[in-house]
Length: 369
Picture 1 (tube, rainbow, N blue to C red):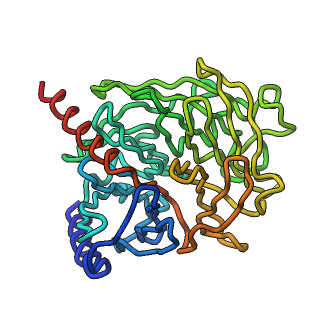
Picture 2 (picture 1 turned 90 degrees about the horizontal axis):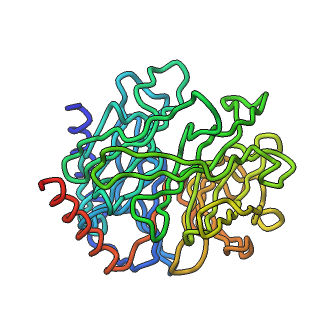
């Protein structure tokens, strides 16, 4: 623990040197991570600036999220997962100025934290713990809450694999618009459909809704759609390795997936009815985007009306980049190309940042009361 905290302080000194002053940013600009420790700003005007470089041993950055007071929070899960875990959640204060980095939480039960969001309803960060390393002690696979000030970690929802479909091997989260405490969540292996001969994966994916109590007393999950059930999806094959998810509104969301059989990536639009029940889906990238990509994190940018997603592949023209498309799949372009991107966050409006701060304060008052 002490070693990790000391290396984080050393990294903070390096970060201050890298940032060299304030970076201009506006609502709709994009902050992203690369798995080698880089935290970057990409403006809609096309300028890229490195905000931070974290050089802790084994650093492997994943998702990131803005929280109270404009602080930026970043996950890191070294692979393979060690015993004890070397995973870290960093807090970066003044990310567009001095970029002061510190360790918010580290080690077990954090193992390979991937998806990360701030939940205004509870005033906590929510992260998906997905170790994904065979043979390692699986202390906790599921949803964790992390206090953005104290770093206290709360175990909220552990996976239950007694029956399928279920939320198993979750990755990313997306707030359900207009529904406090509710989140869309993907499961890479949540389907009842078994897919043989896929290294490291035995099942197709699924899509779920997670509900988190405002006092962090617990969480629950419910199935939206088993993406391996072709009788429901209407596709001719199961959807595998489902990872990213982003919501446009409470009835329209997009998920990213990678088909092992065809070695092809895809972005699917998922439509729900007014009750939140599954209506249908369609592949918006077929014929619009080179299919040799491996999409992971995906975010809807409401300021441009487009989708941004990270290509995690290590080869091809788009490998490691952030790609951008319209909601119908057209308009494909490379948005940023700074390396293997893992996490994407859209800079909110100043009013949105103020609301985050107010939500954090209100949640703290609820806990004291």
